[in-house]
Image (cartoon, rainbow, N blue to C red):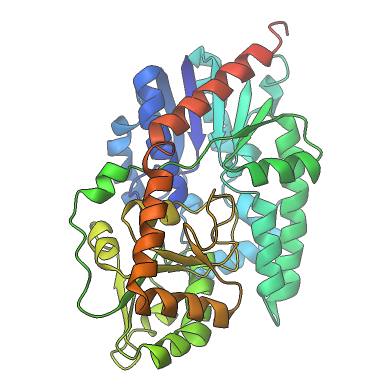
Length: 413
């Protein structure tokens, strides 16, 4: 097959879950087929990252679009959010909407002779040249890493005060845009059976083919020896410029971590992830036993030294790669059900689940104070992901869905 992959940014640096998922899938798909990539580059860092696109595609084309930055300067972000009040689009989509990109994509699609076109995440949908879609023999496929409106709904529900009304408005806009856009594609893919169910039932979509499973490279995480830290260590791993992670860490440190420290005074918490905000950096301190690392060149040493990993997410969608990575690294995980959503894991066997600050603290404390329990859960978790959840298997499932979409597309205009 000749495939065109469309995304709002390059995949490097590989520090975000969605980019990691796309990267590993594309590396396999590009081995078996011919993959072209069409994207945006917001700044010098992203432009430099385009030089690495050869790792996951045959050919790539880019336009420069500063607003596509994942982290706009605050004044520019707030100005855009205010202007967005006049738009029907949610701000998270409007930020990536570009007439220049639409014209570029039109040219790429019309001249590419592709067998299938894959839109990675929902955000490029507003810039696709939909006028050339109706008469095309080529299926347009949407790869949904999350049900985006569900993230905004949860964000609105957990917010208090001034911002709640704004977030509720954005949730409703996202819900409307997402339902309308998903219906326009020939096929929709999710990352979990639960997300597929939501889109079929809540959005009444007949074009949801199914889920592309989350994968993990077990051998990669086993390359570094498992050597536990001298003091009981809990790790949180995630991009610290993503609001769901920031919300989770702040709530855990404020409400659960004091309970863990009361039970295990020597416990240490490492917050590992890129671009921590000022309020996350302020959490660090010896008195609380908290370290904020910022960007690290390799997350494996932190995972392989940790006694437990915590995923206390209150906002989210899709599936969390960080849990599979911890399982591959033999680190027992304590998570909320939202954090573990969509993953085939069983509470008490592969993972420890907790829904409140108290039950999260109790789960972490149990793993720190009961080493046999921690080892048993880590061993069962490793066995769970060792064979069936390779990235090659995940890419093979995506390949199958692409072939199905091609077969389902009428050949006449």
